[in-house]
Length: 222
Image (cartoon, rainbow, N blue to C red; front, side, top):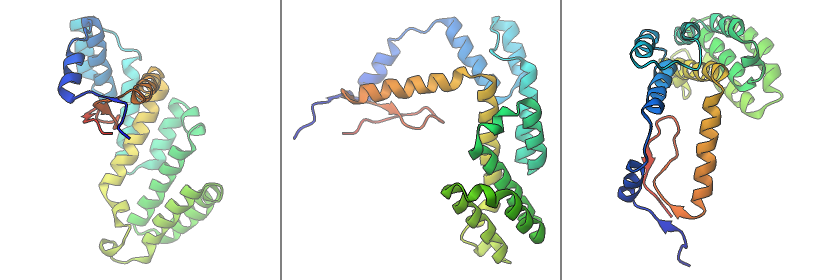
C-alpha cells in the first residue's frame, strides 16, 4: 500500500525555511546563547556591548560551569562533584544517571592510576548499591570493573573506557546538566521541536533533525 504522506524534498524544505523571517533581535539571542553554551565569557561580554543583547543567565555562572567541566575533563571527578554541589545540589539529586556516570568515571580514574584495591573498594561501597536497583548501572559497573582483569588494557574489550574520549563524554554530560539547571528554557525548546516534528511525521516525509546535538537536517525516508 502506497504511503499517503506527502514527500517534501530537501530543496523544497530549505526553500520554505529560507522564507521564514527571523528578527535581528532573535538572531542576536541565538548567538548569545551559543557563546554562553560554549563558555566563551569574553566573547559574550563583547557581544553584549556591541549588540545590547543580554544573556538569560549571569556571565559569572559561565566561569563556574567551565570550572566544573574542566575538572571532569582532567579526571578530577571528586572535585567536579563538589563544584556541582556548590552550584546547585539538586543537579545530582535529581539526575541519578549523571551521578552514576560521574562515579563510574571516578572508578575508571582509580583503575587508570593502578589503584586496584581502592577501585574495588570504591565500586563495592559507592557503585554496587546503585547498580542493584538499576540494570543498566549494573551492566556499566561490570564493564568497568572488568578492566582490572587485564594487565594490558590495549587488549581489553572495554579498553575504550580508559580513552580520553570517555572523560570528554562525561564532561559534556556534566556541562549540559549544569547549563540546563541555569537556563531551563533550553530543554523546553527542544521538547517543543520534538513535539512539532512528531506531529508533522504523521502527515509528511520531510528533512528533519534526528540528532539534536548537531541540528543537521536528514533526508526524508518513508
